[in-house]
Image (cartoon, rainbow, N blue to C red; front, side, top):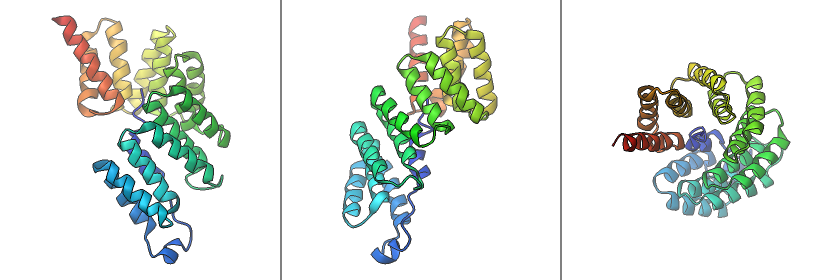
Length: 254
């Protein structure tokens, strides 16, 4: 399904601005240190985690704690990362930027990466309590419900998200998947074409269109979509799923 909107980008989307006067008080440029810590987490996650923990002990505050969680994410310690994000969310004021809801939504995505759909659903339900009309939260809940096999409920969330933000290509792609699972193939194909109009490079849309094309007997069209997703988005959930489908297709030819 989703690539967590490229989950690495979530780290920089949740920039933690230091409290006024904190830099002067500590002599540390917290925003610069946060960015450096996040960058290190991509290369050496456990070293970044240790750096973030040391920084947190020196009044690093939310930026340090968030970087520690992101380092755990990069190290694939998903449960620990998600729990850290939920704990951090509990310490933030409702008007904090990013909001507690944003942290909970990020935790939901991390739980899902670790295969913990029930805990992911709990986290995103809490996020929606902060902002029931936040389209990205609804998309996340729809995706989680789809992972649980509840495609009818997922479709409701995705329809609502698209009503709030008609240009969201992820929502359109996931909506197509739920329609397919509900046996509404023609509607699914129309939805996936709309997703690709919004973003021709969306890997989840390419993966889904390949599935729909194969179901209609278009093996070459399916192969083209999966090859694109596998080559251009290697290492993401959609890219890896496309690669797996290509391998299955080749095995069936042998």
